[in-house]
Each structure stands twice: as structure tokens, then as C-alpha cells.
Image 1: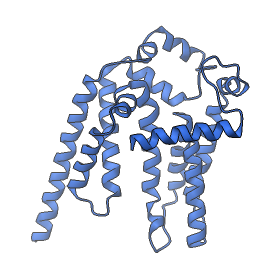
Image 2: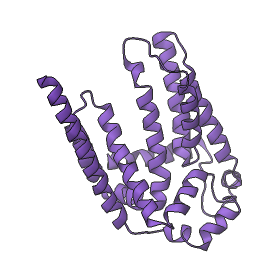
Image 3: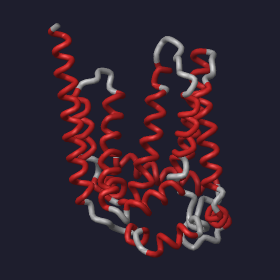
Length: 260
């Protein structure tokens, strides 16, 4: 009886903390100013990009749709942002070995103490949020779904999980290029790991791979990437040799290590 009472008390505390966190995120999200190219997305320029379906701009279709919406309605932006930021913290809580309320609170604290430059570009900046946060949440949700592969027993999944992961892979790609490629690598790693460890293959793992590849192909079919690869894009370029690629990777690694 005492154990049941403690469990009920813990559940009530969890829901209370969750509601307070969502409200806190909502207040901050409402107060975040529009900045950078948020103003372009919220103006006629954003509509012009939409009318040509972002041709010659980029293939971040879902991210572009999202930023078009949230730069025109502050209430929608507040709701979506606050729920997204809570999901980030909730995902950390779900990953914790023991599901304690302190895990949720700690993840929220860490959320607010991330480096200022990273916080400004991925959390406050609406355009950055639209590309980085939803795509990251989809990747993390997939990792939560397949987290059971780390156990000693072969995992079991409902048959409908294939549909879920297929859609997650597809919708997770056209937000930003690096996450789209990461999801493909993630799916391959999960498939390879389970094949070696359990000598089995699972449809839902392949669903995420197929969806990620399909979404990536759709994204990279945008004419902007052919311009970038040919060197005719006036704003963006790409590494043209192995040495350039290595130098670029090392430079980005330095930035990542600095922020972490």
C-alpha cells in the first residue's frame, strides 16, 4: 500500500513538474525576439520562396514550411516551441536508467546552460529552431524506440512500428542536410548492430532507413544542390577535394568540441 502511495505521489510530482516546465518554456518562447532571416521568412520574400516551392533555395521543405508558419503567428510559435523543448528534456528523462523526477529537472537545467551561441542559433532563432530542433527530436525518438537492442534479449516490436519508423525517417530528413545523412548512418548502425548481436533483422529498423533515404533523395533533388556542387552558387560551396573535406571536418570538430 505504501509503495503504491509513493508511486502515485511520484506520478503527480512528474506531471506537476512537466506542466511547470512547459509553462516556463512557453513564457520564454513567447518572449524570444525574431532575428536574422526570420524577418525575410515572415515577409513577402518567404511567400515568394514558397510559391516556387523553394527551388534554387534549399530542400529543407518541412523546416521551411515550419518557419513560414511560426514567423506569422506568435501563438503557434509559442505552443510548438514550448512542447518541442519539453520533449527534448523528456527524452533525456526516458534515457535515464532510473525514471526519477530529478532526471527531468537536470535535463531542463542543462538545456538552459548550453553555450550562448548555440542557444541563440538553435533555440531563440526561429529559423534555426525550425531546422535543428524537430529533426533532432525525431532522431532521438527513433533511438528511444530501438533502445531495447542494448539488452541481452532480442527485442520485440509491434508490426505497425514499421509504418511509424518509415514516416519518422521520411519526415526527419527534409529539415536539414546533416541530420538527414546522420539518420541514414544511424539506421545502418542499428541494423548492423542487431544483425551481429542477435543474428536478426527487424522491419522497423529498415523502415527508418528506407524513410530516411527517401526523404534525403527528395531533399537533395532540389536544384540548389546541383548549383552548389558545380560551384555556381553565389552563397554556398562544398569541399572539392579530400584535403578540403578533411580540413572542413577538422574545423567543425573544433567548433563542436568547444561547445561541448
